[in-house]
Length: 92
View 1: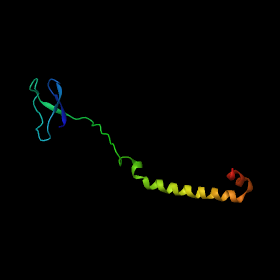
View 2: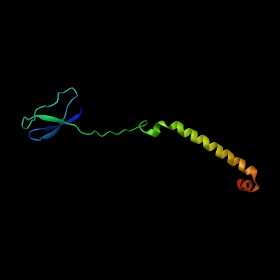
View 3: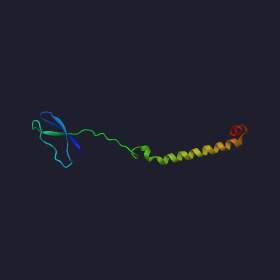
View 4: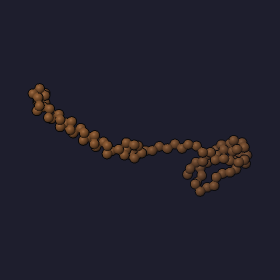
């Protein structure tokens, strides 16, 4: 059940009460029988799990980066056949 905050306009008494969504709002102060106002405040929300962050939906961009690494490794295998000094370092 949600918790609602009320404050009296006459005596400034403030209190919180748990009410169902279907319950009517309180209108009378329990202390002085004055008029009550419902207080509204910011709600803290935390998004946990996958799908809430920008990078969660960007997995398709990570796979092309791996493809760009493959040509680099294939060019390194071509380098030892091109020169004797690089071939000697590849043998050791």
